[in-house]
Length: 157
Image 1 (cartoon, one colour):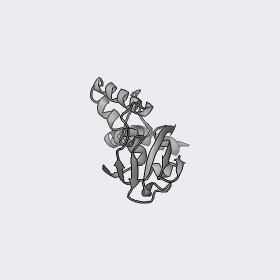
Image 2: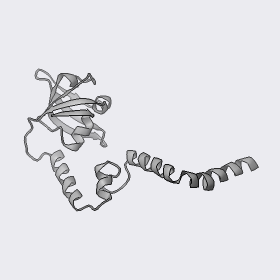
Image 3: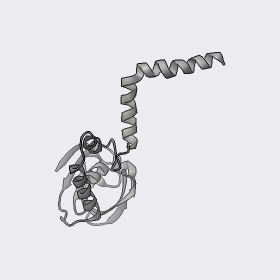
Image 4: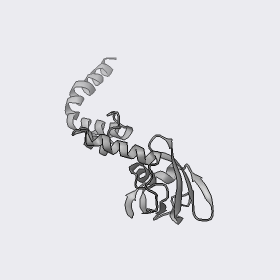
């Protein structure tokens, strides 16, 4: 399956790249991803953005812990050869989907969009999006009530 303008890390997080899949990118993103690699093992390295990936190109096995390679936007082809066994990542994905069934709107949409995490707390990206939206919606009031008051205090000093 071809995924347009996405990242390796995003496809792992969504469950679209699994152990046993062969992954190839449309451009060289380092770590030889563009040549195509079969995923032998996936583990979480840090947060949601970097994974420890054990892979092979058919002749050599290696590990990829490379954040830039995993976060580079490109077209990615995934040939699903993975087993359907419940790996820890697949089990976590199933639990997440099950929890979303019982989550009401708008929390469900916030979670799906990555604005909030499983604890309904804003993610780092979610904070940026929310603050930008809030400033856009309430910018005039913020200017009057906060910025102008700060400027008046600076002028007095």
